[in-house]
Amino acid sequence: MAMGRRMAPRDTRALQIRVNHRIRVPEVRVVLDDGSQLGVMPTSEALKAAETRGLDLVEVNPKSIPPVCKILDFGRYKYEEKKRASDAKRKQTVVELKEVKLRPKTDDHDLQVKVRSARRFLESGNKVKFTVRFRGREITHPQRAQMQLDWLVEQLIDLANVEQRAQMEGRTMSAIVGPKPIVLQRLASDRARREAEAQARGISPAEIEKEEGITDEVDTDDDDDDDDDEEDKEE
Image (tube, rainbow, N blue to C red; front, side):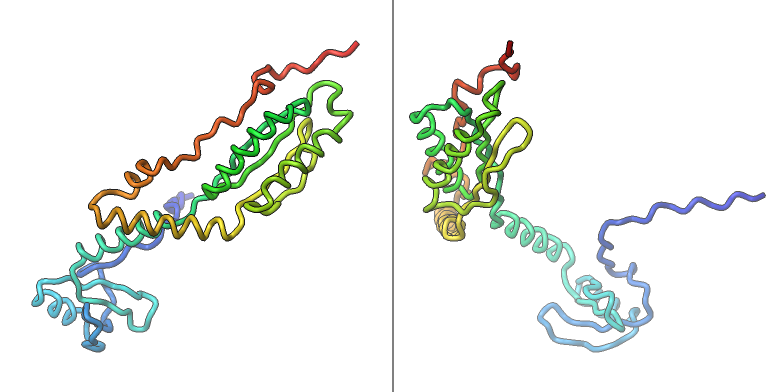
């Protein structure tokens, strides 16, 4: 029995833009780069119209009937599309989840340190996960961890909304808070200011951030977390 030919896997990537002679439909609707229309015409005539202008025929809406094509400089078009995508990505607010660890025996001074670390994370637009780790018989008395997490969340009420209230996860208890919308709005405003200043000075926004000492690298560990994971042995 003849073996059927194996089908090639379907390319799941977005269809590539068709340009010039890769446009194989019989007719297209042609638009110039300035928005004016030449109307519907045979594809061969559209190619000649692009060629006489020293430009390319680019399919911009293949689903239209007939497909819509623009006469433009394709090299410049690709550059501008890439630049727009890069600008949009840079302006996105990337939210990370930062973990702040503690133990039921973490003292009040270290808790204050944890609060300062969490505030810096939130002010940078990141979420914070507080994790209390239990060892040995500590897990039989979770009230201390519950009180710690409630107190930590209370200290951040001006910056954060609670996204996950304190709950047990195996031998840990955790809570998650995220920055309030006003914090993210302030970050977006600061980012726009730095970009404007960077453009005026002819430098990158990253250099402005460096000058302003902007960083969210904070040490969140205390001495209690340097121990290994071995639980206390019980008689």
